[in-house]
Amino acid sequence: MEDNSSAATGLHSIRCRAAVCRKPGEPLVIEEIIVAPPMAHEVRIRIICTSLCHSDLTFWKMKDFPGIVPRILGHEAIGVVESVGKDVNEVKKGDTVIPTFMADCGECEDCLSNKSNLCSKLPFSVSPGMPRCGTSRFTDLNGEVIHHFLFVSSFTEYTVVDVANVANVTKVDPAIPPNRACLLSCGVTTGVGAAWRTANVEKGSTVAIFGLGSIGLAVAEGARICGASRIIGIDVNPDKFETAKKFGVTEFVNTRSLGDKCVSQVIIEMTGGGADYCFECVGMASLVQEAFTCCRQGWGKTIVVGVDKPGSLLNLSSYEVLHRGKTIMGSLFGGTKPKSDIPTLLNWYTDKKLELDKFVTHEVGLEDINQAFNLLIEGKSLRSVIWMNN
Image 1: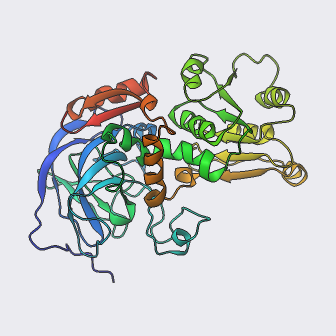
Image 2: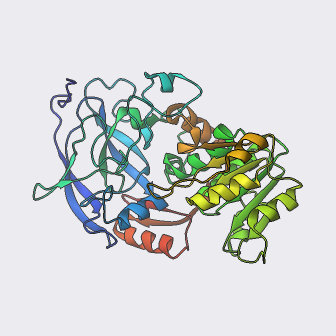
Image 3: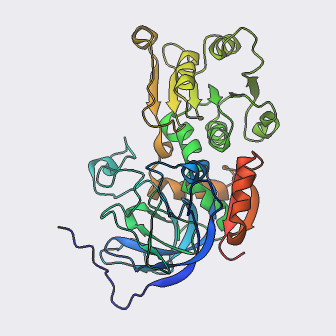
């Protein structure tokens, strides 16, 4: 059995502030917690800033498992290594790191292959604990266990993360502001990567994006970087089009004003046979099917990026799959490998190739984190950055 005992002698628990989800859907509670020392293969990180993703909102509302309370949400962040457990060699105290929900162990067949970003040694799950042992490193001042979220839990001044879930960005340009770098923990990397890594969008191609939330806009940003000539945004809210233009969207389809036509008819007519690449960024099986119908026969690709509710099933025509020569594929974390691709994306930002600034619409301190939740619920923000010491 693997020894998960605390590695370095002399490490002590840390008392710090955190925003704790005590009851589903109710405001997070700012309170002091205890963060235990890192065990083997673990890293304790001082969070500089974190950003609010829609997945945080989804699990904040969730009343049934995998929703669980009390819990520290948050999974987009940047921080500095405060201490390490034993058998941690790739980062050290003082290194700047970006934690991610996707593991990159560098040892399993998947991590060693350029065909996959799905670590088979530490597979992704919505576990309430650490990936290797399932236990928590958080307790409140009464000794009650506080659960983890997506192996990151960044709504706290200090967190503990497995070293496989940490991208070391110390060697990247230190001038990159942390309130931009933190976005690459999840949303922006997921969207840009879906276009860049999963779909491999080609220069001059036509792209259709279902859903213009932050993930859909990140896909548009990725498609723009890859050189797509037409990027068609599809959404129920026409007010999103002006914002979407900033991310490279060239045309907009309002699904509520199509009359007796379905979306696929409109896209096929607009493109003369269908889009080369279709991205579903909402998380609805019906939209995946519509996206598949929209993509061009012979070489069209449909990429599923949105997270649907557990148990949702797709209903695709086997005739169309066989006779139309289309491809459908999933894209978790944009198909990117965190430890190698996040530094690349940061360099793209430095080179002004990737435009991260336009994703950040609000910035608050930890004490105002509930304001960030309200802004996202009201549809008034793309990404709110939460500073630990604002």
